[in-house]
Length: 247
Image (cartoon, rainbow, N blue to C red):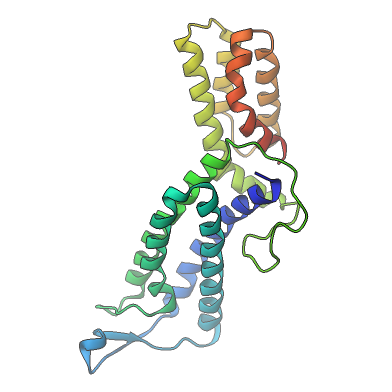
């Protein structure tokens, strides 16, 4: 997997947060009118105007592009989840295009239904990230990301976005992999107290301090070089260590 592809997954994780933030700002603008012919549903949604229309257009465009970008990644790296991701999208999109047929004139109900299906997609994206975090990252080929994709990214990601990404997506994966590593050593009866202490220290570290966690990961790697069993088992952590070192 090249670096640009991994960056697309990282940015996709940030874009979904933007979509989640837009929803509670946009839906309060939604207004309803009762249909005389209820064969089209009890209520219809009136066209938005002004700021509400701008938010709606932004959210719809962002969501459609985000879906297309993540679906492409799923089809390549996690195809068994692509159908579930699409089903969740098909359930969610009517609440964004306003093609749904509301039974009650309640915009918060619409927001709830959209977020429910978006959360299902977010879970799949999280699984995709976990899966890809175990892959080797290579240098990117030129022009591997199309300019009009929502997951487009420059080489440098803003510090605050990196911090958010690390806390929400990378740190949980790191903790899980560290636990697997220490469990395996324990099963093989490796008496390495220092490794256990360093591992626990990483897990309990504040996700906001990325540089400190980088240092602790480096210390763990160096300590493991002194023992053949530890040196062999820590290889499973190489991909996630590589990801963290690039932040």
